[in-house]
Image (tube, rainbow, N blue to C red; front, top):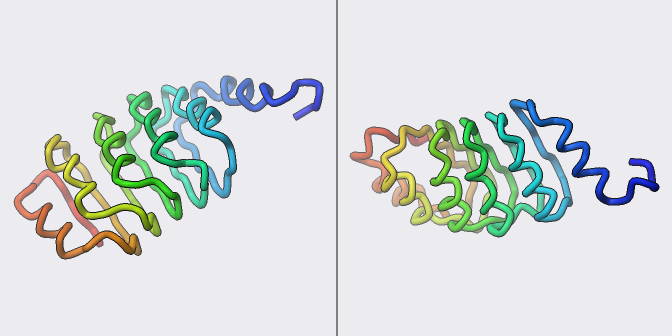
Length: 148
């Protein structure tokens, strides 16, 4: 961005992407405010985040603004079970993929069982997620497809 535009330029560019349907963020170090701007992309249907240390629980509170989001994937991000609560508020969500999200626990997935939302969940290498516990929780929840 040209220096004369200052830090606001990043957000202006995001505003120009208002019709964007899919976005993959890799190794981004943007602020919570920048992630909030991303969550203003109302037509976004797929969001993938990889190795973005600023995507914390605080940043995830803006995800429910993505009313058309169908797929969410995260790899190596520092959010906790609180982030899953925010994802649970996204009514359009159909697929959730989490890998190396080491602060998540099996208990955080209760939000998806409570909402009875049809959802495919893939969990890989999240060290605090007790896979047998998660499998037991999802057993009987026919609306959830679990891939571990």
